[in-house]
Image (cartoon, rainbow, N blue to C red; front, side, top):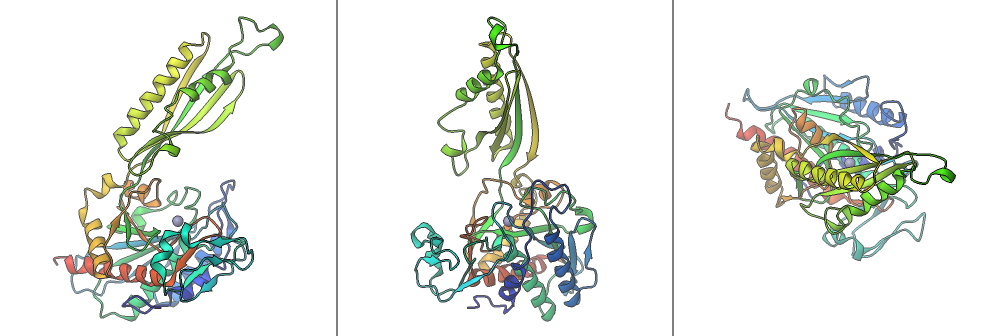
Length: 419
Ligand SMILES: [Zn+2]
């Protein structure tokens, strides 16, 4: 069913893109991390050229950029970008994806044909309730689907094709970007903001129909390194200081109720020890520090530091060194200074019949880094659900709706430009 005012072939494109294995790989030394991503990026480049775009580029890192020329008579319509990543999660195979259609969904559990025990259950997936009568696409049960983020890629391509075929729709200059290696946190590593040359952009990589994400965590990484003293355990009395025991005590002193991922949600931040490298002589503990307020990071880091120093004070002969590294910052700090970027998206949602639902992301996006690199970039929905797993699903209704929102965003920016 086409839910959009704009008829496009985004679903057919999506079915085509998911067949290419673009799983990214954390252990790789190359960029992009896997060659399959380049296969899809090259294909996208060719498709954009075939659509008639004249400035399609693919740089040495694989980033594909292109422009849809303005149709508006106004000379100063801001340039708006749309971005999607081509790679899929390292957590689940993306090789040999065989998309399965579940037509005219009636509220049943969705059984995936390659593995009868793989079932997307209605009661465990509350968003399925809004999909009655729609067509749903899943994987066959032995791979992920790749809707994250090939749905976004297909929706952007659908919107581009539609706009080129309908020059009567007024819009300003539009930039398109397809990027590699988002899933391993490297999607923006070689992203050339200056060459992309847009005033703002939208990643099309969100989950539920109507969601608009303008806020992410601010994030730091902390390393707390305990130094002990090692000697032969048979002759260690009064000499040995076991840094493993010091580190264990430090971890046990971290707050137990609240301030941890397993006890927080919504706008609450946390401190999360996630890797420990332990030996008698030296033990290092890595911690993720997350909060929606950047100032909240410093507060938590001071608290962790205090606990570490108190712990070593109880172990004469032990010492501690602490390093803090910035990971990314809440995009809201940037978006607050350019309210049009969010307001125009909200207006586009409403024109598409959707009430925008503003949800904070308890993580980071490519957009959080891009926003601080000078390209304000909130995230709009692509319709992806259960991403990174073989239980991924998406409805064609939501995909068409995402295309409509993309086109409406372009129209709103044009309409609101003064000259
Ligand atoms: Zn994604």
